[in-house]
Length: 499
Image: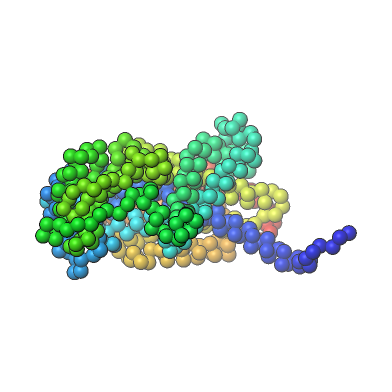
């Protein structure tokens, strides 16, 4: 017999490498689960931000003159004039007027005068969790983009590996064995929501890997010039020019936009280089009736229109690029679309969970149980929402500062995993963490309503509170002995073998 070209590996080393391989697979599945769960919540980012400051004035229309007043008011709030000032106009999804720069923004009233600072710590925490996993921007986007690619591969390979998946589309054997029930749940949700799953995975991969793609295009086609990649999609930079008295004429720019492009609804106004001879104005607009996330119209500092990027009505590639963001987050079509995305996002999250749970069940049935790994997975699945509820409570009460939300989440999750692997049963951990999540959610609601008693305005504030209350009550209901969620996910063995 021909000898192997490499030395024989010790059995103990092989076992350790196999254990490490398994742990890495579970870790990737955990990250995918966290991205799916947080993405489902981020669909309601605008509603969460309004809920965090429920007493802010809300209105859907504002005059050009008011915007000019807002710009002037914002200028006076800075000790040093920033490189860019942004005005956020009221829209149907966020009917509030704001202005600021960088990390500092202020709410404004209907006259354009700025007031209290914008503070959306928890909603922004959720966004950075979903988009970056709280990693540095480029690295985080890349990791999340790769998870999107992995998800797409899992979806497609899942269909190819199950030739009867469509024929059995309505089989749901929850009363049978744990394996059959988990298999049917996994396969049925995979089939019913397949178009949504593919859309989310594909758009997520595109958004996450766009930065790497831009660098690659710059190296191949533009001699490494990254700035040359974006103009064909997002338009050229606006021309510069002086403004009357050194103050950009916001009112004229908005009036011109309303006259020349009534099909566009102004949303964000950027004043680049305010107070300098090179200043200019960019107005990002929403495009009613289209999937395009935005279009951009450019003006010089005196308010004269220079042109638009054409994202909503330009080349096909531009229109596709403009639609990716809206399709991924469900930010089109208003609340009905968001509710559909909520249901489908939860289905995708359940598919992520059931896939690993099914694998653990099969291991146990084959005589290779992993009790510690099973408990660790339960800690991830139910510990993540518990810690999200804890960070929400801490943020709303002021006990956890914005800078501490991220370490609290990740250190807390690592601690829960370690504790779960050390003792207990998967059923006990599941019940405990569901009860804790419900209790923390209700506590957060109580604190929030106590802090803002009588200040709740608009449907978003009450809608988020109602949704969180219903979620907490459903979790409490799942603790009942006859609830299917209270059944052990894995049939117990007489003598479990620890990894």
